[in-house]
Image 1 (cartoon, helix red, strand yellow):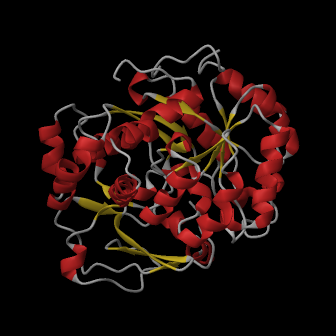
Image 2 (tube, one colour):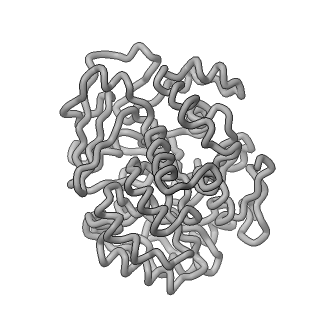
Length: 399
């Protein structure tokens, strides 16, 4: 199942945003002519036309010209042969219950990517990275509308398939007993993925320990488990309480392998500048790049915490959305050509014709930041594979 796991760690088998984030997202005039399927929940290439094959020629025939050009001219030379994605979601549409209009408005990503079956994840990886092997650290959906128990069971079942090439984390509810974490890790999970939306107080009011109870952390620490942490509160990593609690978590539970998601939700540079310096001397705290499209934030992170603590994360399926993101102060604005209920504006047809996947935009920003920092392909290889592999105890025969 996937790449070998080091004996140093337990063996595999023994984005949200606050209301301050505006989204400028248009309604297209009609169905796309480029084999694109837009459902009420997500917008992604039609998996029924994606050949699960190693032929990059077939994959390139599915790409839009902008995608093919970006991969061939800007991305291919920077990618290592083996990629390890530390942040992807897997689940079925039936795992999610009804979502109210208020929730769709409050959390833009909830409408973009609520489900991604294992087969679709594999197809998306092959579409995005046709010449690379992609392994993954996955978990289920994280919103309160999700049937988390069923979703966790689906994720676990998929680990037995070698073609999925994956490891997984258990999505946890704070009210569940800590013993469930130990049981899950015995079954094959490497750790946990809690989420502030599952706290009784909700994302805006919860502190870290409200949705990651200390009893859970104690068990995770004893088992040297992985924690992918989505920070709460509107201030994100720039919130002093979040910084204080991160430092307390790191001090009290030093054996937890801690990954702070989305670079602490620092989608804008001022947020990163308020928070990252406080964590610069904590080498045990890692940061994933998932759904962060800001080259300034990546450059600041490279200078502040260094390339050895950054981990590639895709946040698939959300980042299959096409478009661009603009950053103004501490607010970001998403532009896309997808028909989501909260779309209110759009750019010109000429600009929209140049849209590619959000994940490609994330990698464009990362490469730009590496170039500005005077770093090259070896640093990219660390971020795309080596750092996460070292943290998880994974080796590769493709390096």
